[in-house]
Image (cartoon, helix red, strand yellow):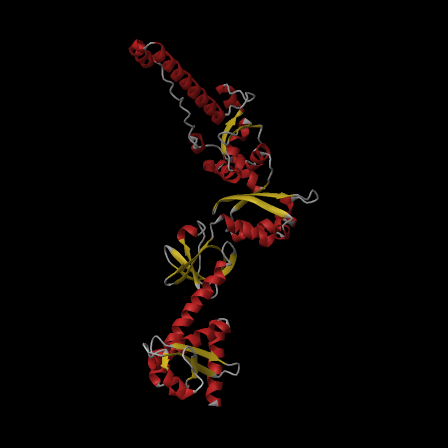
Length: 436
């Protein structure tokens, strides 16, 4: 028996090591499988069976019966006579706990126990896998490209494979089987078939996490990334901030001789990265966000969360960017609607930049309040007229019919997309900026 126990303990230890599971989980799965198998084969489906494994590895199975006057279910009830045959001290209402002889386990019971154990181990593996990777959600992990298909790639991330769909791959990047890549865990989902993990190379969070890995000041929290906007494979903008006046947040991200930002660019397959300083002042933040263009003036409309940005004529194409990209990224970065105009356009359209901002929301509330007040006064006047002379009813109705109605003014907003951003413009200044 000692040799058998030693062999069983060794097999259990190997199982725990191979599956990478907690020993307590495996022991619990084994005891549950043994108890179910014993109930099914020897004591009845409704019986009370408990299995325990001692510290030395010995397996012990116990059954419990209640002592009753009239037995209705033999699976977990004993008559007083049956109980007193075991021990004369038993009385009605007592519990009779007996240890079963596990040598009774036949081949069929052993096979059933093995099947149940496998099922429990698979369930434990799924749960352990989910718990491990749900803690890595929104983080970067290193993986190896296992398989590349037309619409997706499978990335080996350790204990399982993760799906990298084509839309989550950087445009222009070619993945090669066996290649090591960094991926961003974008989704961890528990399904009936197991844990489903999706990763991304285009997510904005990938840029943020890469800078955390490369810049100690960001990892420590001295420098903070406030926002990120990205068009994967082409260009990204990040806004950084620090409360420490002795630290240059942009310089910290660029690193000595540009090494830090260069490492991020290389990992992103050559994607350009603009690093700007964040400001709580929207005017300053918007001006920074449109870099490398120089901004002359920013006029805010808080009620519409929009900004009119004025730039020198020779900076217009740089501010808008190729195919409007610089403007789009600035909008995403600042969360403000931005309309860019040159100084010449401002003069031609006669726009008064010093005119006070009109709070349209407040204006509408005031207008509605006035209309409601006028309506109340009109109702009071009608009631008084009716009280004075009922014969004037027809005249009152006629007067009411002649009242003018006030239509709301058309406050439709201008479209967010300006067709001029798609014009064929000269980008020589734009390209010269990045050639440096």
